[in-house]
Amino acid sequence: MTTFVLIAAAMLAAACAWVLVPLLTRRHVASIDHESSNLAVLRDQRAELEADLGNGVVSAEQYEITRAELDRRVLDETHRSEPDVAATPRRSGAWTAAGIGALFPIAAVALYLVLGTPAALSPDAAKMAASADGGDHAMSPDQIETMIGQVKEKLAQDPSNIDGWVVLARTYYVTGRASEAAGAFERAVALAPNDADLIADWADTLGVAQGRSLEGKPAELIERALKANPSQWKANALAGTIAFNRKQYVKAAEYWERARANVDAGSPIAQSIDGSIAEARQLAGMPPAAPRAATTPPATVAAPAAGATAPAKAGSTSPIAAGGTVGGMVRIAPTFAANVSPDDAVYIFARPADGSRMPLALVKKQVRDLPITFTLDDSMAMAPTAKLSDHGEVIVGARISRSGSPMPQSGDLEALSPPVKLGSSGHTLVIDRRLP
Image (tube, rainbow, N blue to C red; front, side, top):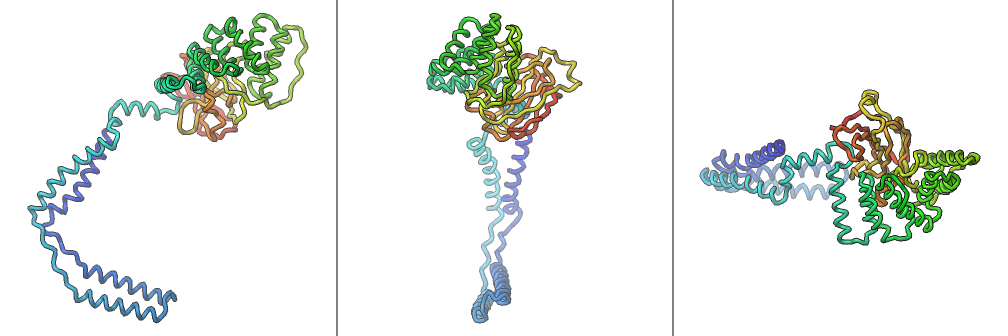
């Protein structure tokens, strides 16, 4: 703020001096020498005419005519005399200077108050700007709450906006507010009662909200999702989890194999499901499953991040949607390794290289998993309208959160990449910076 005021004052003083100094120091206004000025112009025109003749631009006849006209005008200027401009008394100039000296600052301040941003001069505004732009991490909790408030205001005006309910649900989910996320998913499903993707997301979120248990209402929702779409991958994955927890290993393997058939064979979720299938088949006394070739699953609606309602190997994560990916590895610098707990949360995310700081994709791990090889894609999106594949360049980051919240907090450890191309991989993130 101080720097801005000093610069503004200096500019105002320079503007006043430019106008006032001539009024205060010159006793008379000097007459303008029109004769000398016009003669100089005529000499330049004569030189140009000579050059045009030499370059063949004008003919000799045109040259003679034009030169004669210039000579006549030179002669006229030589004999012309102009009366001096009447002198301006010094007293008049002083009064004018005084008026201008008082008017300039007042006018400048008034214009800034009307057209400028006076609030930006306050210390609070500076702090907000530093918080929003000074760091390279994601949106602050206050910014997230502001966004949630804006979405809720729009939904109050238009409760039938299903996209708004989905955005609100996934925002609640990624900020750890599973109960509120489940409520928002319930409103979305009320608007699309046969959408198996949304029903499965609701079941997953509700399971997290009730202590990471899928029994009861979540199980009913999973059955409902499978009736709407028997091949819905998440509903099958969650149904397999219920069967596994009930020690129904053959059924668990069947559900997981159905889920596995609807995700990309090269994706992390496919590898996780493969591990769960192998475990279920082993416990059921069944032979190992035959390896599968990579396939491209049908595109599905993006779902929230991992719900952790399934067993460790099966997981409960989002579908792999068509679109770009970005991948690499996350590790922690040795100097910070002793300062974290194996149970601390690790959030790996991608955000736009410019513009919004809201993550486009987000996945949660733990410090015990480090070093982690990751792949981020559209299935990890927070909202269907903000996808990774919609951006050519992104910034990839990893953050260790001791509080467990995905929102950056003082003391968290973080690593950020420079802008990278979507579709690239092999990026190494070394967590070596502590947030202030």
